[in-house]
Each structure stands twice: as C-alpha cells, then as structure tokens.
Image 1 (cartoon, helix red, strand yellow):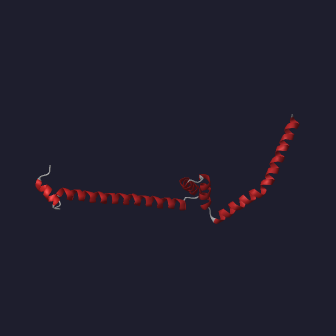
Image 2 (cartoon, one colour):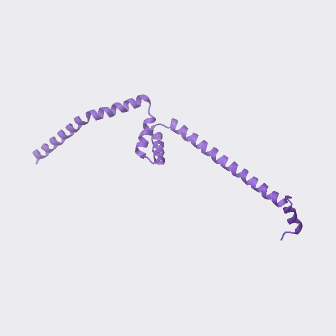
Image 3 (tube, one colour):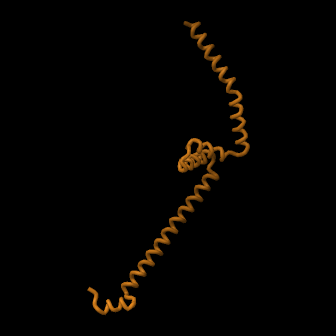
Length: 131
C-alpha cells in the first residue's frame, strides 16, 4: 500500500519518479516503433527500386514473369499478364514484327488448314494403296 505521503503527492499533482519512468518508457517505445517502421519502409522502397531496375534491364523473360506476378496479385489471368509484360519489353521494331507475324498467321490460316487436309488425304490414299 502506498504511504499517505505518496498518495497526497499524487493527488496534489506532483509527478513521481515512477510516473516519469512510465512516460519516458512510452516515449522510448514510440521512438523505437517510429524508427522500426521507418527502417521497414526504407527496405520496401529499396526493394521496389530494385524490382524497377530489374524490369528495366531484365529483358523479355523477366518482364513476362513480373507481368504474370502483377496480374496474379491483381486477380487477373497470369498468362495474359505474362504476355503483356513480355510485349512491353519489346522494342518498337519487335512489336511491329510481332503484329506482322500475327496478321500473316491469321491470313494464312485457311491456306494452312487446306494444306493439312490435303496432306491427310494423301496419307490416307497412300495407306489404302499399300494395304
């Protein structure tokens, strides 16, 4: 039990050593938490800068992986994210070449299907002729 003089000192508003210690420990804890969160945020910012550097100089495969990860985090299709990441790493000439290949593939698709069907017919005729 606190003595009558301690109780009187507390009631009169006098600050005791224990109260100062508690206040100082709270200030110390607040400063420690502030410093810890500051260090954590600095580490996260350094890691983000590192990832930006990797994506800037990493090439198509690294950008594809990062695009897939971004899409997965965003809840989108990882395949589409990887494709978008890979295309974003291409130079303008590479993008033009990719578009040209896709357009040619679409235009030549009917011809390719006809050629495959003709090859299957020829294989079937040869198989029947041999048997």
